[in-house]
Structure formats: structure tokens, C-alpha cells
Amino acid sequence: MIKVHNKAFEILLQKAEIEAKIKDLAKLFDVEYKDKKPLFIGVLNGSFMFAAELFKNLSIDAEITFLRVKSYTDTKSNGKVTEILGLMENIEDRHVIILEDIVDTGLTVNKLQIMLKAQKPKSLAIATLLYKPKAIIKPIKVDHYCFEIEPKFVIGYGLDYDGLGRNLADVWVLKE
Ligand code: IMP
Image (tube, rainbow, N blue to C red; front, side, top):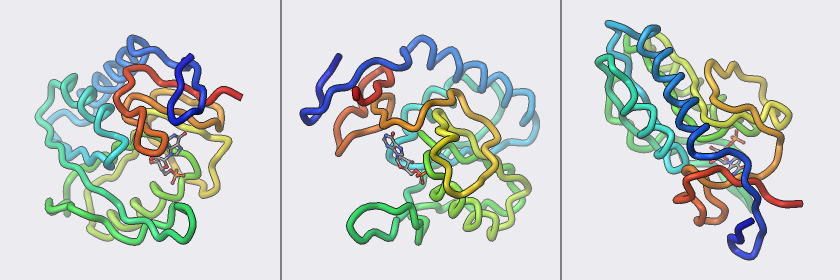
């Protein structure tokens, strides 16, 4: 058990099993995107650890970049992505894979898909480390995920609770 900002978390997924799943995903991409020089787009901040682990396990020619999204917020984030920040690359005619830390309601990925599709990539896929299918509000097609989890709050491996917990090597779930 650990405490972050006074909340208790218990272990959900260990570093070794996380890294094994990411390795499998990299192997799959090696085949699927051979000779296609795909562009991976990590969605900051949460995806940085997943993106790094995946990318270092790839053997094919591939590029990586990162973007942030600006969400419309009133009192709390409602996933209404209004803007893509920092994407310099021209993705027209490229094979693009969005890398997310977690798909929760699906609102972020849905908006990202719409905004990136407008730039006419050759293909657009979604890969996420964690997927909470029971939390989905906006039905989206998640092409690849490493772990399906219950709709509970998690931290670690890049994911935070109010800024903390991103450096944890394992994934931890909020204790009820
Ligand atoms: P969405 O609800 O699918 O739009 O998810 C938006 C973002 O909320 C994700 O990219 C995460 O950064 C964050 N998020 C959703 N669920 C969790 C969680 O359990 N822990 C930490 N961050 C989360």
C-alpha cells in the first residue's frame, strides 16, 4: 500500500508484466508497420513512459513526436478537447498511431481522432496502455490496448493523481 496526497493505493499491475505487454505490442507493430515508416504521436503528459518503452522496443524505421491537448474546462476537465498543441509534423499521407496512457470516457481520443483525421493521414490507429471499457461515454474504436481495467482511478507508469505518482514503476489503484 502507498499513500499519495493522503489517498491510499494498492498495486494493480507490476512493472514486469507491463513491460512484457508493451514488448508484445512493439512486436506486433514491427510486422504491421514494416516499410511504412509510421509516426507515433504520444499524448502528453501521461503517455511519456508508455511511449518511451514502446518506442525502444521497435525494430522498424519509425518516428515519434508528442502533442498536448487543451481541454475546455469549467470546474473540472470534461474531456472536451478544443485544440492540439505542439504538433509540428505534417501527417498527411502518413501512417499515424496515437499513444495514450489511458482511455477512460473516450472523449479525448474521440476528439483527437476527428482533429487528426482532418489532416488526412494515410491511416490512424489508437494504442493505449490502459483501457477502461466500462467507463466509455463516447464509443470509439481502440485498436490496441495493453490492459483492460475496471473503471477505478489508477496512478503510476506515467499517470498521476493531482501531479504526483507519475514516477511509480508499477500501476496502482485507489483503495476503496
Ligand atoms: P478520457 O476520459 O478517455 O477522455 O481520458 C482523458 C484523460 O484523463 C486521460 O488521458 C488521462 O490523462 C486522464 N485519466 C483518465 N482516467 C485516469 C485515471 O484513472 N488516472 C489518471 N488519469 C486518468
